[in-house]
Length: 168
Image (tube, rainbow, N blue to C red; front, side, top):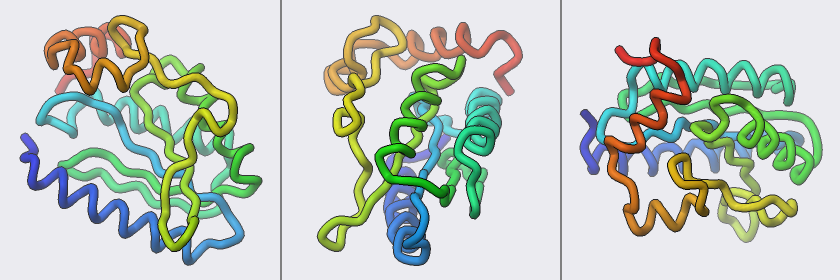
């Protein structure tokens, strides 16, 4: 189980790594992969199954020229420098998230530097709808903010999506 403190430290390290990668790779676009998994367990059979599928999809669709994958207790992280235009890469990442069987559990952030800050490119910037809740289909942010669904309910839905061989 991962504590809130561990998650916050992990988020800070990820932000620092993203800034470093953007600065060091000005000729490519940074895609950062994480797995969406509710609850205190961030590394298990579910997350690794999604991570493996996501890495494969990124490699097949975006052809990274540099990558680093970290299998951490706080969750899987993948960093990929890909060739192309920023918004084209964002569209391709949205296509993976929207069309891959496990895509709803993949978070593929496309990052850009603006005003000295590194931040993700939003889906609406490329004309894409917000991501949908896995359980009810409403905008996912609404359900996350209101905690509309229990962790158990979300994990049941995730298990359905991934099939029976995802726990460990």
